[in-house]
Length: 230
Image 1 (cartoon, one colour):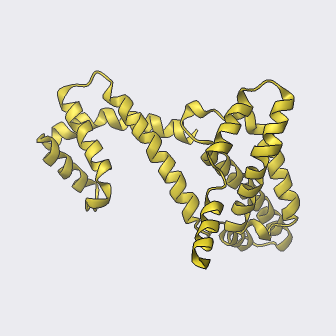
Image 2 (image 1 turned 90 degrees about the horizontal axis):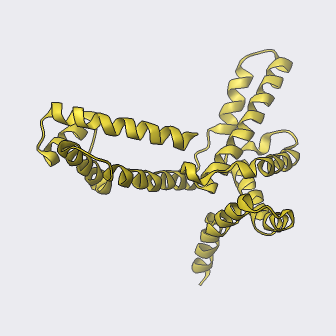
Image 3 (image 1 turned 60 degrees about the vertical axis):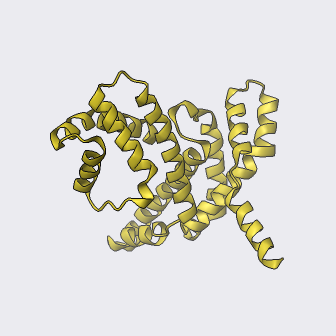
């Protein structure tokens, strides 16, 4: 019983930013009634923002920043001011969007602190050491969740490519790409050359044909990645 309780607590903690919060944010940005917006923020969005900020501050060791409690409050105010800027049509989810903004906001504070310490101490190593202290922690949950959301949106994008007016060889290459993505965990790929060999084997095309027909999807992927990063 004790182990089950621990598991439940951990699961709850890992899912503090749920679909409920995503939907509340979407409702907030589309609503023109200020009273309803205030209630959405106070009752649903704010608790998720506060917990997200606390987790990011703890995980990335921003706790060492001076006046960290004041900075957390400032960061929340910053999130409020940009809340309406979130645009789900660009492909990202609210969790990814606001967690990245929060991390970048604190990183900017770290850099500002590093510059101040550098001026006070008079040597360059301070700046490097401060960034190492704050930014060297790896957050497995956030990293995995962001990757998962990225891949989900990439699959949506790939399905759009299928609806284009593709040539026969382009469609063969696209099908090969889908197979590689679907079976990625069971395929041993060590380098770029190995990927080409897999695609050749699946499509029965020669190397030149594979390269020529991959170009279209390279461009499509680059455009998708740019939109995602934006």
